[in-house]
Image (cartoon, rainbow, N blue to C red; front, side, top):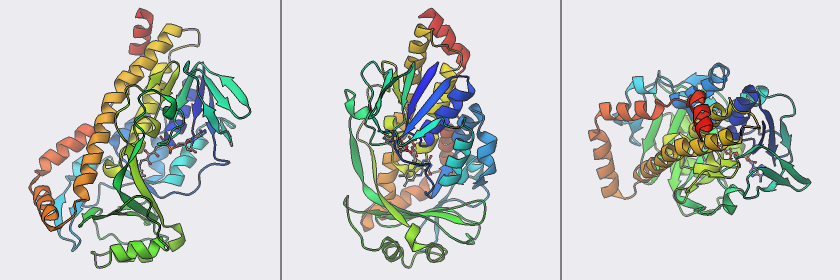
Length: 389
Ligand SMILES: Cc1cc2nc3c(=O)[nH]c(=O)nc-3n(C[C@H](O)[C@H](O)[C@H](O)COP(=O)(O)OP(=O)(O)OC[C@H]3O[C@@H](n4cnc5c(N)ncnc54)[C@H](O)[C@@H]3O)c2cc1C
């Protein structure tokens, strides 16, 4: 069958690889003129690798990522004292990637010319089987809208909740040279401020700084601002900032979807990744969930041909039924974790820190293990359902 995918982000590209490897004809429309080269780091948990394994990309991605589970991780106070340590076993599958490496691996797994850069998609009609471009329209058996948090496709669907500001903004950077993390990583929580660090495979470090602030604040010098916000915090935060090229430090106001969408499917079109369930980055799951979406869709469509109309309809319904509850529940949790982590004021910070200290490590481990123990659907099941429909 012919599948048109809108957006060559992580979600669109993993879907393209999965569907192409399942024997379908795939075209990806990307409005950017060329592949994304910049970017910082990305945490990929065990569920992301299960999804990547399902589309045959797991080993290629492991080769360009570094395990994070060997370091002590959890939450610290700005003076460096630990509030909680995350049990190592629940982080055994966590790996840290540089985003440009992730994109390189995904693009190199596709047939040449699969991605059509400079193709700004204007919309998808309610039938969901046509991609409308400035240059005309193209029809497909299935259209996948993986066009990100500000999805133009989603904006025309009934029930689109739009996006909302989280209350915080995030600087991200990667050190230019290796920095010794002293055997520890994870996050440090202050008063309306948070700092996180994770090692890349070559000794460089991916870091992020989060500050509560109104949306749209303009700062003259982002690198100076992040240094100012985290001055006096424990080592090696200052060393990491000093080892980062100021020109590469970017800040982003964090938004998520303002509420749950009533459906991920309209006609022959499905939403995937941030377009469907943009979440705050507080659980490090946005890309992982996009990968799960992609692996699910590829598994459900794998056995079907373009003439199997009932099978395709059943597969798209099943995609919606499988993906919506899980992603919407994770998005809710991510927002709650962000609200707690960004607590402001002495009393709230004291109560939060006390609560974090009291949470049993076994509970944290159970939650992390449950989050990561996802499995893709069996393609045979969707075929049977299609035949029964
Ligand atoms: C600060 C921060 C930290 C994060 N950290 C993590 C993490 O550690 N782990 C994790 O799993 N996730 C993380 N995430 C989330 C993750 O980055 C996203 O969930 C993921 O990149 C979404 O991928 P996507 O393909 O759905 O969307 P995108 O990456 O946004 O891709 C959408 C693509 O569609 C294209 N496009 C848009 N409109 C059109 C159009 N009309 N026509 C054609 N093309 C179009 C865009 O140019 C873009 O290339 C983080 C996010 C943020 C903001």
